[in-house]
Structure formats: C-alpha cells, structure tokens
Image (cartoon, rainbow, N blue to C red; front, side, top):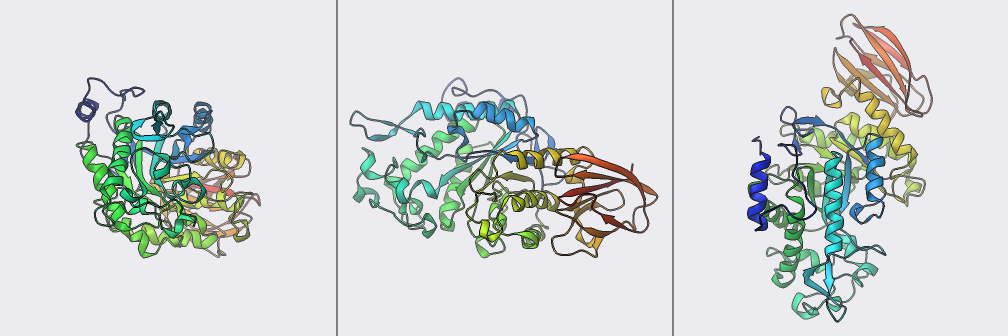
Length: 468
C-alpha cells in the first residue's frame, strides 16, 4: 500500500478547497501516514506507521456536540482510550444545526451554521492532538423519522429551498426508522432518482469532507445501523472516494441485522474494493457463546482477504432497553473482551442508556486490557479455541501464538485445560484480576503438556502465559 506524505495531502486539500491554506480549525499533521489496515497484518489498523488497537468508551453519539468535549477526550485518553464514534447528528435538544436560518426563521440549505462546523473542527483538532481515531457516521436514520423529522432542516416545512412536491417528501414519518419508509434514503439515481434533494445531501457531504480530509485519523461509515438499500450505500461510497481524490480514505457501511452471518452483511464482506473495513457492532445484540461464534464466522469468511473488523458500539448496561435478554453490564464487559480476544481491530462501549459509556466498568476494562498489552500485543496472537478442553459454554476463550504466547480469558469462575504441548521448556503464567485491574501472581509453568487453569477470582480474570 502506497504511503501518502503530508505535503501531498495538503496540496490535494488546497485543490479541493480552492484556497491558499487549510480550512479554519484544522492543523497540519506531523504524521505522514494515516489510519489504514496494517501492512503486516491487514486485520488490524496502523496509524502513523505503527500497529494500533483501538479501544473506546464515550457518553454520546454525536460527540462533537458535547459541551465538555475536551475534558471528555482527556478522560478517555487518560485510561488508555484512543477511539471514538461521531455521528453527524443534531436531533437532541440544544444541538446545533448544520444550516443557517434566513430572515423568516427557516433553514437555508445553501448556508452553513458556522458554530456547528467550528464544533466539528474542535473535535478533529483535539482528537488529532491526542492520537484518538474518529469513526464518523455520515447519515443516521433516527434523525429523519418520528418526532425528530418534525424539526429536521430537511423537512420541507422547515426550509426555504424546496416544497413537499419537488422533493417527494411527506410531513410525517411516524414509524420506527427501521421500517425504511423515509424517501430521504432513496434519492440516488439507482433508486428514486431525486436530484433536487440529492444535491443538498451531496452539498452536506462535501462540506463535511472539507473539514475532515486534511486529517489522517478519520474513518468513514456511511450510515448508522441501516436497513437501507444496497444502492444507497454504493452511491455514497463512490461519492466519498471521488471527492477525496488522491487521498485514500477508509469507508464502511453498518448494516442493522443482528444476525451478522446474514446476506445483508455480505454486502460489505464481499466488496473489499469498496469497503476498507467491516463494522460488526450489531453482533453485540448476541450474548455469550453466540456472540463469539458469530464473530468467528466473520473472521473465517474474511480469511482469504482480511480487513479490520470494528465494533463501534457495544450494547449493555443496567439501563439498557434489552436487559430482559441479558444485554446488561456484564454482557457489555464480556463482549469487549471476547471481541479483542477474537481479533477485532476496535471495540467501543456504546453511550448510555443503552451502553456503559465512559463509566467505571468500561474504564476498568480498557485499562485492564492495556495492561495485558504490556505483555502481549493482540496482533501477535490468533483465536485458538482448539487449545482449550474441558470447557463449558462461555467459560473460557483463548488466543495464542502457539509455543510463545497464550491469553486465556475467563468471564467468571472456572477451570479449564490449556494445551501447551508445543511450548518447549518453561514459561511464566501471570494472572490479572479483571474486577480491579490488578496483577495477582506470577508462577512458572512447564511446557510440552497440558496444564490445568483454575481462576484465582470468581468475577473475571485473564491468564497471560509468556515464554520469557
């Protein structure tokens, strides 16, 4: 994969923006290499030329709208976080809108609200300073249906640019956006071919790119958990790449189906030339062993052509709407560890109330995993469940580079047999308590045989076996 130097990026940016400097609020990056699949192992990300594991937990989706954004980013960085999600949403009370209002108080979709874009510039600037990778979701179906549609700038009654008839929109879309009834998401030529509305959508995306393309730490996701048509996503993937010009950008689409083995998700799995990475957030709707097994299906499917697999949303908390299905705090923490043990390139705890956000349990999980990384980098090992025996369902998970390094995650109290037959000589077994993030003990173990592991605590632990 070719390296793009900062001088090239800035020249491209100047051509795109038609001005003699980078846009307001942006900064020239010190790095000559942006976020991209790692050249040595494309299942993981690299940033600034080095492999990186992306971990995150934040308290909002449209993070750039937060009043305490800078301190929130500082808190995330302090506990080892380096990954955020940012939807370009403005539906919450008090949010800034992307568009300015005219003298009649209506939105003008040809005029920008500078305050909105300054907020976005701040997010890009502050995350770049802290080496925090930003995954942007451009469109969110929840912005344009039900109650939110009534105040939406794209609603014909709220702007001075078009009428219901010219853009084929209605005054109400009362059903859950999962019904996919909103024509807003059918504007592209291969679907409803609605050029009047599409040109305003394109204008918004161009404006967004005018703020993001000067930065190297941005990932692009077209939609939030969509059930939309394939042609909608394909149109925007091509549009983004064309607008980016010579700059290589990373693009994906996040499909809604909770069964990530379904045909819906194969729209991205089967198109490595279009989609640079996979987002499998919706797998966190599956609990326990099923959560792990579904993810293994994805990694097996990608084996011939690996790409990073992200999970920008891990659901589960005490206030989750799905606690009756076991999508609770324990599930969120377990999913975080299962994801990383299984080879995910990123994992982020979803915002409250559906997720833990940046809270005590998520902080502990991120900081504990960073402690594990001090002994074993996750890209140095692969999922190796075949090395475990006498294991109950969801009792233990293993990743290893056989003969050198072994990680065994046990969500609760347990006892399991680990095959160290291909480990010659002795190694050191380190136990990490995941309930408080403390190293418990270090003992010598003999290789060339199977060993019995018994958890030293009953509420989550990690065994790290390393040949010193």
